Amino acid sequence: MSEHTPPAADPIRVALVDDQQLVRAGFRMVIDSQPDLTVAVEAGDGLQAVRVLADHAVDVVLMDVRMPHLDGLQATARLTAAAADGGYAPRVIVLTTFDLDEYVLEAIRAGASGFLLKDAPPEEMLAAIRTVHRGDAVIAPSSTRRLLEHLVVALPAEQAADSPAHDSVAGLTDREREVLVLMARGRSNTEIGTELFVAEATVKTHVGRILAKLGARDRVQAVVTAYETGLVRPGS
Image (cartoon, rainbow, N blue to C red; front, top):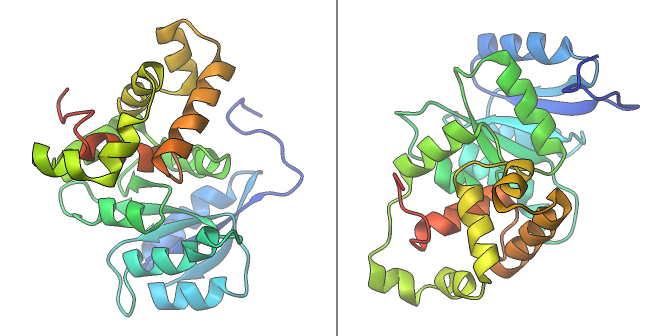
């Protein structure tokens, strides 16, 4: 077994939510081929997903954005609402196509832990599921950065300065700002530690404090805040 497929007593339970049956079949074939992953639930639209997942606990949901009856944004918000109240909620990965979906940012605000390009290679999808299950929301750093730069519209400086998010960023220490900028550039904890000449455990501590100060659920939400407040600029 490779280092990317750690042994697990219980496989990671995945839900597939997409209105195209052929897409779901392809994802299922890839996911079920892995000893540490299993497709537990499928749904053809967001409404069906919310209903089915109310009775079936899963760990990670692969959620299409554009679906009939209830779209991926609304379904994500409903599925992740429990987490805001301290309850259990699955982690959601939004499936998107780079040039078409303008809803990825909204999906992250609604509670998604990240996003994955629909045409990503199978190994990238598998890595994304495992990454999100571990609680780390950095998925495909190059795709993450491209999509954020494509989707985030920087606020005018005067509006950004007046926003609560700007106040929370202002409360970061210089080192925490350095770490957040590197997070926004898609660096892993190990890479950040190497660049700043500190231990990975120290980076994890900084990341935890950054999330707490920003009121961010995970790394992706923190990175969105970094872009929206102008701490990181597209193309920088």
